[in-house]
Structures are given as C-alpha cells and as structure tokens.
Length: 415
Image 1 (cartoon, rainbow, N blue to C red):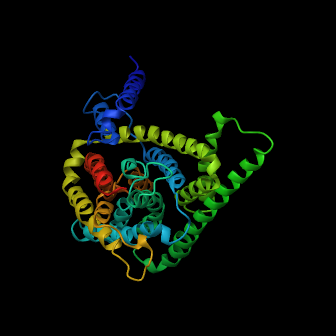
Image 2: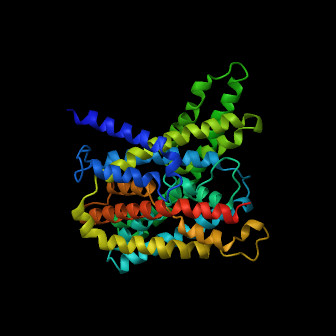
Image 3: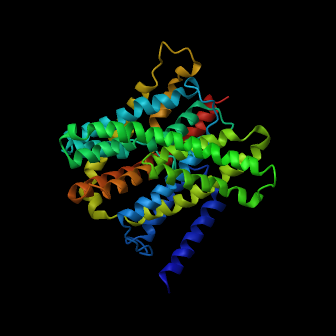
C-alpha cells in the first residue's frame, strides 16, 4: 500500500481525535503540541516509519516561516489596547529588558560552559530567546475583549520578540563570518537595526490600513462575499510580508503590526467580522502547527540526542528555571517614577511571566534560517540539536504545566 495514503489516514485520525476529544484534552495537563510530538515520533523511524521525509534546511525554513507569520498576524488581531506607552507597559518590559537579558545570558553560558565562540553563542541566544506565539495559546488572550494583564503581556511579547530577535540573529551571523566586528557594526546598526525595524513598522501600517480602507470603500458599492471575506486576512499577511522583505525590512514585525491595524479598523458594529477573521486565522495557524510538530517529532534521532543532550539540558534547564524567571522578575520590577497602575505587577503575575516562556516554532525558524546562511559543519549540528532538544523540553514542561497553572490563576486572581 502507498505510504502516502497511510500518512493521510493517520493525520485524518489524529485531527478527528484531537478535535472530538478537545473537551477532555483541555481539562488535562496536556497540550496539543505534546500529542502531535508523540504522534510524530510514532510516525518516524523509531515507530511505523510512515514519515520518511528528511527535510532540507530550506523546506523547514519555509514551513516554519509561514506558521510564524500567520501566528503573528493572529496576535496582532488580539491586541485590544490603545497605542499608548502606558497601556503597553508589560510588553515594553518584556521586550526591552527581558529579551536582551535572555539573549546575553544564554550567550554567556554558551561561551563559558559550552566553549562556543562569541558569535555562535550570541546566535544561539538569539535563536532561543524569543517566546513562541504558535504553541502558547493556552496562556494567550482568550478573546478580543480579554483585558487580563498576564495574557496580554505574553501575547504581545510573543508577537513582537519573534521579529525583534532578528537583529541579534544577524549580529551572531556577522560575527561568525568576521571576528573583526568594527568592519560590519555600523552597517548592522543602520541596516539591520534601524532601517529593518522602521521598514517593518511602516509597511505593516501601510498595508494593514490601506487594504482595510480599500475594503471599506468597495463595500459602499457592493458587499464582499461573506464566505470569501476571511481570505482578506491571509492576503494581507502575504502581501505585507512579501513587500517588507523586498525592501529589506522585518516581515515578522510588519505582519504583527498589520494585524494590529486590521483589528483597529473594525468598529464595534463590525465585531462579528473581526471575530470571524480571528477565528479563521487561528484555525489556519492550528492546522500548520500540526504539520510542523509532527515533522519535528519524526526527525528526532537517538544518537545526536545522546551526544548533545547534556549541553542541551544545561541550556534548557538554566533558560527555563533561572534565566527567564529571574529576567522576568527584574524586568517587571516596579518603576517608582511611573504613575500608571500597569507599572506595577502582582508577584504572582511576575512569577507567571517568568514561567511561561514557551520556546517553539519561532526558534526552529531562526535555526533553519541560520543553517541556510553561515552556520554549518559541526557547529551547525551542535546548535541545531541544542535548539531542537530545548524546544522539545519546553513543549513538554510548559505543555504539562500551562492548563493547571492558568486554571489556578483564573480562579484565584481574575475578577
């Protein structure tokens, strides 16, 4: 029998299982990603060997890239606050303080304990620092009107740090290629830091507001087919990302901003359309998540896990249990000069900010991107397996703890 047909059968059964059993799964200390990972291992060489794909770096990069941009747009659609600094206090703390702390702490540990050179160490830090907007749905905003500070901070952090880690990825790649950082530092600051971020923000605003403005004008003459309207979001995602990449901006950032612009373009009278757009995007994101995690599980191999497992445990253990919690605690320290109520956080919120630093598809994208550039050979293999093992550990630990912790948080601290 054709293996492809068996693969379709297994994937179809998996989708039915997680869909029809979702009511029970939500009550368990178990995430969907853990289920997909286990099934992926079962379908790989250590199980039925139905998935015999050995994905090239470019293929993995494209798959993870698409999953991330859809997820970032979804995060933008969920943002429900005015564009004022005080309203985004938790986001600013987690991006401006926690992300750099994470990157350089991982880099320092990688350099001093794993003997990586500084270029590779910073690159590993940039790959692992971003939290994942794809696998963290249990701890993100539950609906557009959700005002909870913890979920808002985690959602907006996942939407922004998956794009704002890119300058540090470039920094590490440049350092790998040339130890004489004086020759490329100026270009990195102007092009990869200032221009790419500005271009991403600008293009996200331009496309998001522009497309929605055109849509509103056209609807004055003839309504858009309700069945087709959800595809507007997908079109915005692809156009925004492509145009931003053409002008050497950060497409990830642009897509998140475009989602934010689309969310703000809907009036209260059009809340059903906004909800429909969000639901369609989330369904597309979940479908792509299935394929990505299945693929990750199927390519796992015992030999490299044993070879690099010790180093990966050092990085993953310190990242999950020390760097992220301590960094979050430092980043959310009360600022005495800030008068906004959102400048201070309940200790439980600060602790949960530190715990829910889920690593996932975003890190896999940055890894595959780096492998397609100057990261290669034994060094590339080491960083690849340290990243993959760290992601798997995060999927398991955070997947098991998310449901009970968030249920406890809702009962005890939410109004």
